[in-house]
Length: 282
Image (tube, rainbow, N blue to C red; front, top):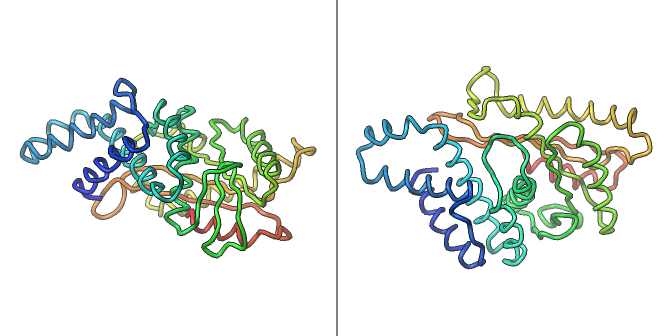
């Protein structure tokens, strides 16, 4: 994305927040990061490129965090604008705007709700019809045999994994719909890593590395559930995801790298639907 596209998206996002009646507190961390992104965009137009680079080089980490937050927030909001009712979108955004979305992999309620928002936006981009209804998201179309409910969970520790899965299944059962639990593992996997991620390191395709990790995580989850949670429903309709922004590509740029892995019984009547959904998240 060019800086001009970035600037255009930011202006459109500001207008959409106004239409929705959602206010971002300028004194909040999120508000400060949006203000920093605007300051950078103004600065790069006002000064020669080399001078601007020198000035912002000393603030690289702060700038990097802010640009990731602004990109993710604007992309998700603008993708869902017009695709879901304004009231449902505004309800989520009001919670998200109160917390931190910094890619530091530290727990925050805003990140829990943003996982739902970003997942819904990815489904929308993939061509599904999306509604922000219980269990959290309901998707249809795009080759699915019928509506599928998605319960979204964003645990911050391995200890939370199985309780989150069980809670997701209860949410789905309460709605009486076919569904899957989507578990975002970002805070668990990336927590010990440097917050500035360089996907060029290691010499391997980053998505393949993430995908391999998820396959091993699924195997571990299934075994632990059988051994430690025998009274709980087995893992049958669960999608694990991993998403993170880092530098990658030629030319090098800020890139979202992600992976998804499904665990589902071969006898599950919605196996094909769940596979279709998982493929679209990769």
